[in-house]
Amino acid sequence: MTSALTLPSSELTSSWPDTPPGADPLPGQLDRWLASRGAELVAVRRHIHAHPELSYHEFETAALVARELAAAGLKPRFLPKGNGVICDIGTGDRVIAFRADLDALPIQDTKDVSYRSTVDGVMHACGHDVHTTILLGLGLALAKLNQEGQLPGRVRLLFQPAEEAIPSGAPHVIAAGGLKDVAAIFALHCYPQLPAGLVGVRSGPFTAAADTVEVKLRGAGGHTARPHLTTDLVHALGRVIVDVPALLDRRMDARAGVSMVWGTVNAGHAYNAIPAEGYAKGTIRILSREAWREAPELVTRLVKDVVAATGAEADVVYTRGVPPVINDRMTSALISAAAGAALGPERVVEAEISMGGEDFAFYLEQVPGTMIRLGTSTPGSEVRRDIHQAGFDVDERAIGYGIRVMTHTALAALASGAF
Image (cartoon, rainbow, N blue to C red; front, side, top):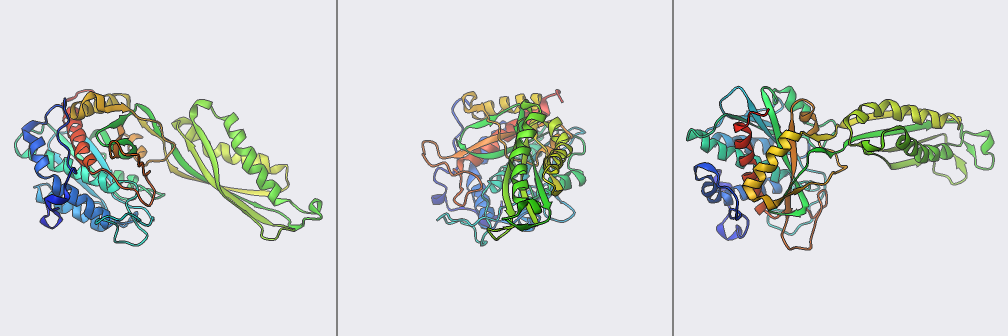
C-alpha cells in the first residue's frame, strides 16, 4: 500500500474490527494479514473521502486504485476515459465479478473531522469511498491468495464511475468488457440504518427503477376574471398532478410497487393572470421489471388523456434512469451463507426493500447477482446519519467487515457450480 496514505496507529483506535466470534477464518492467514494492513486501508478511505470527485470525473480516484492494485502485482486496466478500473485476479474461464462505485455527490461536507472533504461543495455522502476501499481490500486479499496458489479461479474487480449520474456509468463498464465471461456479480452498499458488523440480504426486488417524467403544457393565457376565454393552465396542471398518479395506480398491478411523485411544478408569476405555459416534473419508481418496461407508454397516454379535457396541449418527456435491482435467488443464498461465515450467522438480517435507484441493476439485466446492505453506524449510538446528508460518515470498522464478507463470497462463488 502507498506509505503516504498510512495512518498513525493512534488514529486507528477501533477502526479495524477483530474477527467476530463464531466466524469462520479466512484461508492463508488472511485475517491476520488484513488486520496488519487495516490502518493503510482506513487511510485509503480517508484520502478518497477528503478528495472526492463528481460523476465522470473520477480520474484521480481511479488512478489511486490502479496504483494500489499494480503494487500488489496485479494488472489493472482503465476504462477508455480513464475514470474507472477493471482488474482480473487469478485464472479460469468462469469469472466472479464484484463492483464498487467511485463518484461523490454535489453536497457540502459539514463534518468536523481530519478527513473532511477538501473540495468545496463535493463530498462522499453515499459511502462510495467505503465501497471502493472494500473492493480494493478484496483485491489485495485475493492477490495474496493467488500468489500462494490458493485462489481457485478468476475474480474481476469493477471500479465504476458515475453511479450517481443519469445516464450512469454501469453501461460504460459493460461496454468495456466488464461482464465478459462473468457468471455472477456481487456488490454492497453502505446502510446507516444497521450497525457496523451486520449486513442485510434480500432475494428478489431490492431497489426500485428510478425514472423522471416532465410534462409541459401550453395554452391561451389571459385574465383570471375570464377563464372561459383562456386555457386554464394551472387547472390543467392540477389535474395532471392529482389524476395521473391516481390513474397509474389503477392501471398497473398493485404488486409492481409503483410510486409517482412530483418534485417541481411551475406556472405563471402574476396572481391575476392565467399563464400560457407550465410544467411539472417528478419521479416514477417501480419495483417490477415488467411494469418498468410498460411505464413510458402508459404514463404518456395517461397525461394526454387527462389533459385532453382541459383544452391544453401537452408534451411529455419520459427519461429512463435505472432499472430495478432484482437480486437473484441463488446468488442471494450464496452471499447470505458467506456473510454468515464471515461475521457469524446472527449478524445476517433480512434487508428492507428501498425505493431508491441503483445502477447495479444494469449488470443484473445480463448476469445473475446480488447487492447487499452493509451496516455502517456505530453500535449502540443513537445517531443515524442517512446517506445523501451533509454530515454522513461511517464507523470505519465496517470496512473490515465488508472485506471479510466479500472475500468469503468470492471463495464460495468460485467453489460453487450453481452458476
